[in-house]
Image (cartoon, rainbow, N blue to C red; front, top):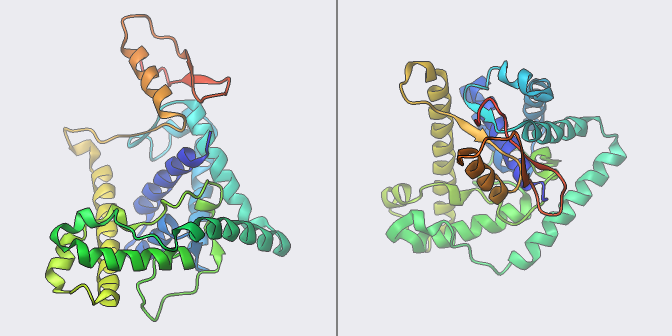
Length: 289
């Protein structure tokens, strides 16, 4: 099984925890940790500090359920929690590398980026144009330019002069399979900003700046909304829960079906969690009966 799904689950939990514990002045660093493959000097310490808080919670299902995030983030099973904890421990080990190991670690990671970047050089990114509506031609040029910069530098560059140099590998990405889908802009809505900006197709540099600023603002708004919803969960009649599962999706779907079938639920289901592996899907029997 590719580690990508486990890493994604770990990223979302870390993002939620950072937002919950964070303040307004840390939003830039939170963006960097979540979207940049290369980091400045300040951002890794934020990630590592949060991982140190989360690793003890992943020791067992009981420790997670007694922690501060369990009312929002539910682990579907102990194997998911264990896998997520394993990746957090890998991240915690990166600051302990000696200079030679750090250089080698960076070289291997950047080699992987170059392998992905080479076939993408002539590509034109169109995945973001749907959110731009009728201004898709403006977005296509700007987003394609930003896409090239991202794969050249490992960061989402808005061309501001005060951008700090990013020379450190982001441990969030270093233990996963880089696929070429790590680019951030497809997740954001571009039509509103492009419509109000009055930009034309030939104004790509200005459009890149506007788009990146808007994406960061939308990300910050989303983080604040989720954290606010989590903090006021007890006052709302509608529950808000994110369930984490770090194995093959189709096996998980079949396991959910078996839980709801008339036959008696067995905690160790006979469904294999991943192709070519001997482990079976194990759902938490307190949540799935």
